[in-house]
Image (tube, rainbow, N blue to C red):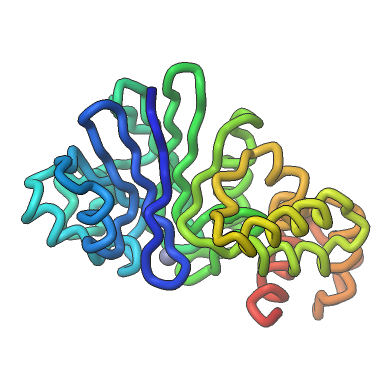
Length: 254
Ligand SMILES: [Zn+2]
């Protein structure tokens, strides 16, 4: 039986901790301290990295020094021992992990899809957030749109483990983007309730994201209309990528 728990780091990062028996892996350890505390006397078996940003990689060096463990991730990161590219598969804690290239937030961004004992899990870093998506620091709107679509196509019950606690503010934006979506309203109330008790709002599921994440709902009539009202170019029939680009730019200044 696998357990997956968040280790909070910095202001709002989650380092995901996967454990089965005496095997321990972490995803995106931006800071070594909280990982070492969470492990206690246990050894770290390995590290997974989704992209090169410092709040996801800053702890690698100390952890490797301490535990001598392998680092799986994009080869853009100097400390990676096992480079991962799109389509790679490897055994992880007795399950099967599959690598998906998801450029957009950064160009090197990957996501890890894990099938384990009949359950599916997605570690998606800063690409797909609960009710939101990452900023476009390096990729184009088209790249990010396609990356998000590939994640949206995963099995609906897949648990989605993103790397930040942004859910409440993302849902405020989702409400503005799609005011008639009652699932957004319900999810916002639930997320507020959890945050009031200092509980994480993640993981979510692909099904929840499909119902409430505006960046996966670029074909919703309300969102299309909202995007059209904000589009500066006179395009009478914007496609989903145009809607996505307008939404992302709106959210950047929301
Ligand atoms: Zn990032």
